[in-house]
Amino acid sequence: MSYLESLRVFVRVVELGSITAGGRDLRLSPAVASNRIKDLENRFGVRLLNRTTRKLTPTEIGRAFYDNARRVIDTLDEAEALVSSFSGRPQGVIRLTAPLGLGRRLIAPLIPPFCAENPGVDFRLRLSDRNVNIVEDAIDLAFFLGEPTDSALKWRKIADCPRVLVASPDYLAQRGTPQVPEDLAGHNCLLLRYPRSPEYFWVLQDEDGPRKMMVGGRFDTDDGDVLTAWALGGEGIANRPLYEVAADLQAGRLIEVLPRNRPLPAQFGCLTPHRRLQDPKVRMFADFAVRELKKVF
Image (cartoon, rainbow, N blue to C red; front, top):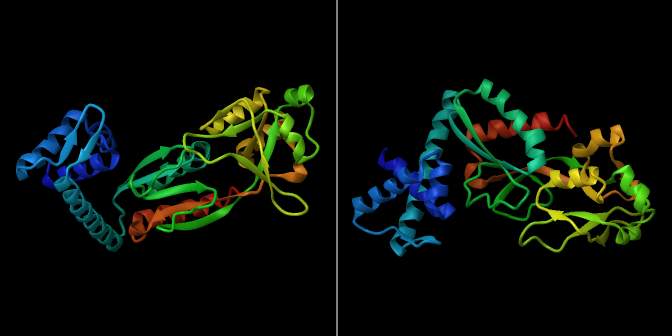
């Protein structure tokens, strides 16, 4: 492995806080990743990382080395992107992230046809309903539902994503059908939550404008597909993107609740770190994805 590749290993290890995680991200075994770090330390005769059984952190010189190594890698990636743009043959890896359900249904199917047209491009798709640190995780393109808040990222809106409240016919037969938003207080609302998430509420549309409704329930999860499964199983009322439950609504497996007070639609778009904006392969895939996804909404 070259010196440059060792730099890449060191950078990812620092960013992910683990030799195992850094190696896995680069498709290397922990032993190989550890040897690459040792090679760098032996090369310079300094310790770059402090290792304990629970934590790995860069030393003072390791932090300074990381900052410069990160710039070297970014510069090289930009140079490769520039050459790629002139050659017309995009090369390299695109790192994507998306929410679980959205990623499975809408993003993952886009990758094979894009790769068929661009065989020099590889993908690393990471799906999670939790918040992802796009910069720290070196993500090139993040598909996102909601309101972006990080000004360091470039937001590209794709569409407004309608949301609906849904429950199974059995649940509504047993517990009754809410007639007004206030009735939700007497129901088991199925909630999307994760550690350190903000206090949860649903914002519903009303004649007088958006209404913030505090809701509660016995079940919460960080996986949106689990919420849908619970709703299908008759456990309560879920707040879901329409595209995820449209087939269940059409088949009668789910029924829309409070159709006159639908949740506010979520903005659907993609986020890109500014330093990645000029990478032609990322731009090409973003254009391709936006074009295809607009057909869905």
